[in-house]
Image (cartoon, rainbow, N blue to C red):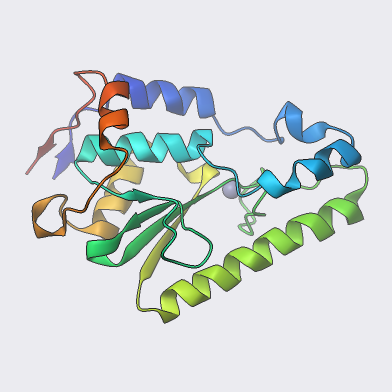
Length: 191
Ligand SMILES: [Zn+2]
């Protein structure tokens, strides 16, 4: 099986996303201003999340966004398959992989950052435990793992199985996503 084309849109997003070794400029605000934004840390529609959403659509999967039926409102839910995909920023969710350079704490106010980010990671683990306890399975995709679109597509396919068929689910965002898609943005799978 071979993924023979990847949408230019998705590729463009991948390039834009890159693998930034440091948090975005916005995250370097002084801590007081930063703390006002902490409520929004369960950020929606982040670049990594959009990249995965575009790829899923191009592969023919339909999903629910920020699914309220499960703890922590997972980013992408596939209710008929009882599966969720979480897309996580390495810095904000503290990717624990030693090969990841995106999760390094800033040089100043390290204890402040450590406490803030530790609670994010603890909440992630707690929600994932609850989701699995309910009989769902989860795939966590880290920001630094999204660069190679072919590998990403294979991981998604291995986790979700075939797109479409009886597992097709209601998709509220379908119309909006279709508008955002370009005609050549479909991936073709060849056996
Ligand atoms: Zn990472």
